[in-house]
Length: 92
Length: 279
Image 1 (cartoon, rainbow over the protein chains, first blue to last red):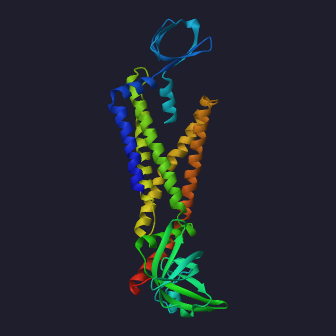
Image 2 (cartoon, rainbow over the protein chains, first blue to last red; image 1 turned 90 degrees about the horizontal axis):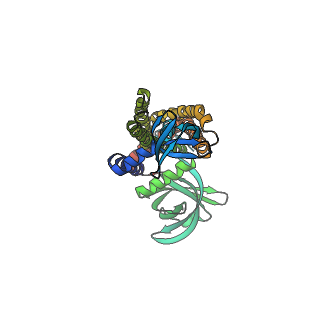
Image 3 (cartoon, rainbow over the protein chains, first blue to last red; image 1 turned 180 degrees about the vertical axis):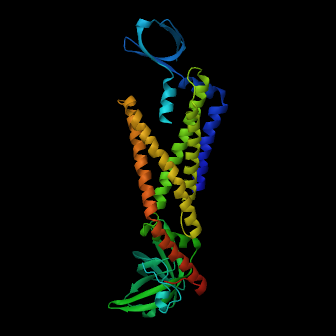
């Protein structure tokens, strides 16, 4: 009974691991997802995406929908880098 | 529960080396495979049972009995009358099982264990270690995701302490797995050793959960105002309390387990000596 339950749990875990590690689509998608940055604008909105570069207060990047954004220093209040990575680190 | 020892001077008491519990279970008596009458079992053990009859004079020495333990567990067994004790209103008839399937004997043992709450620490340990096992595997998955994410991101890198934490998670998962697998049941000293190993291994998940809760208390202000996180932290705090309670109950039950195993061991030796089952 317990061995069966244990094997079932281990099987689900092993399956998830295999998908995570060996399926390129899922692997890339998850890794990109956890590396998202969040930019908070002065208008009170938050933009989730990936920041490519930040120079002289100007930030350029790509949103989840694939749109490119550029914000000047006076247009945003703060940037949270790797938000989900930090969340994972805190929770795991 | 009567506990005496085989080979003592008192021959009646010498037989009582088993757990016997009072019950009120309806049963049907068959004589030579023909229905005889309905009775109510007053006591049951893994070796036999007793019931009261108002007019037991015509009951023969051998009979078949049919009763239920719970809703689904029907038990049929062949028995022999061992004694007839006169009572003010009728007679108490004590019987021993002659032929009973192993599965039915196991059902009776499980029933008696439930009655004596012997199975409580096992059940608590089972649930706690299972939850810890699932938690540890989820954490290992999260760690792997974190590792892959950190490897992908050039700016954010993992420290050595974080890498060592991966080893701690593996230890947590291993100990939770051993605690879950070895904490199944106890019916002999070998299984008691397995239970002790399960309990010893459970200390690691317990310590992990407690320390993790302390860490969560530290980071709690960062996540204040987020309902999902509040739910997560509350759930994990509950797990810590439950795991500590489980360990406490299991430790307190060790004496009880010793007593029961002692009785079961003596009972088995009595069965081997007498070649039958006795109530």
